[in-house]
Length: 175
Image 1 (cartoon, rainbow, N blue to C red):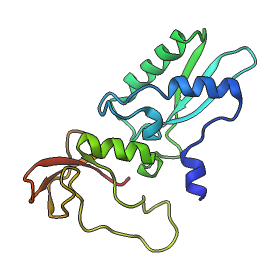
Image 2: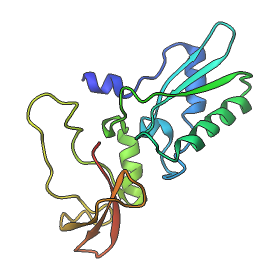
Image 3: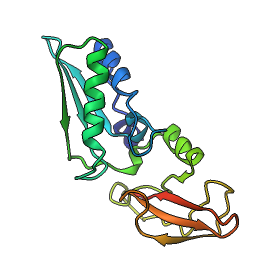
Image 4: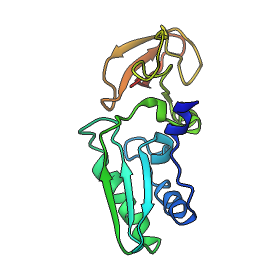
C-alpha cells in the first residue's frame, strides 16, 4: 500500500493539480504511447505564491537521453497553457523504479508490443525476492520465450524472441 501512495504523487491543491494534468500529457519520446505520468517520471508539480510552476521529473536512469526532450516538452506544454514562469528539475533521488509504472502504462506497453516488467524491484520490498522465470510474449501470451540480448532498443529494455509466434519483442526490465 505504501508503494502505491508514493508511486502516484498527484497534488491535491486545485491549481497544482491543473498544472500536473497539463504536464501529465507529455509523452515519452522513446515510447510515445506512454505519458510521463504513466511512466512514473512525473514526480511533483507545485505553484509558488508568485504563480511560477515547478515540476520535478525523475529519470528512469541517470543519463537517460529522453529526459532533455521530456523537460522541453513539459516547458512547452505549460507555457502554451498560459503559465508564464515554468521550471523543471531533474531529481535522481529516490531513484526511479518500474514499480512507478501505472497499470494503464503497463497495458499500453503490452498493446504497443513491449512486455511490461514482471514483478517488483527487489530493493523496494522487504522479505523474499520473487523471481519470474519466463517473460510472456505481448503478442500471443506464450511463455515460451527467450532472451536474445540484455539490451533492446533502449538501455531499460531487453530483446526477447517468442518461440511460439516467432516474433521478437522488447521487455521492459524490472528496475
